[in-house]
Length: 36
Image (cartoon, rainbow, N blue to C red; front, side, top):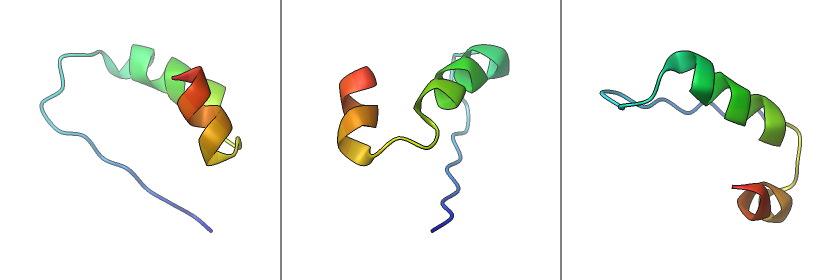
């Protein structure tokens, strides 16, 4: 399944957001939530 998330007007740089997304990409939901 392919999922796309978008966030507008966030006070976080795209680079920081990409670092977090790269860490949790491919994990199960429970593991991703634990990481966050």
